[in-house]
Length: 130
Image (cartoon, rainbow, N blue to C red; front, side, top):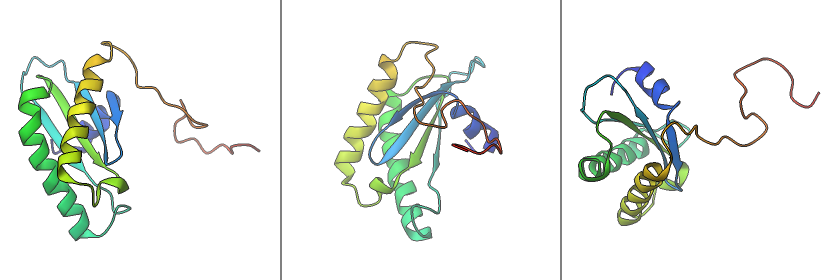
């Protein structure tokens, strides 16, 4: 996946948060059975060296596990979290398998649960709590 629109579309799909990453999965419904994946790690996580290391590790995990446990015709996005910087690789693998199982258990058409004070809100300019 390379286009920003694909990443934004995946954000509307199912999500499985884990300590080292968040997995997003969204079926494309375009008839193409290809499994696509994308990786994003923000500057908030660290400098370029740390972000690139995380992306390399996620790439290896995705290439290893998605053919076995991924979803045909879907986009898979791994979003790096601060907890994934120094996380053991075997633990990341276990968590990705767990995340894929979690998404498989979710009923088709289920919207991801969003909790918190901003749940269901866009990027409005209104004041919160005023």
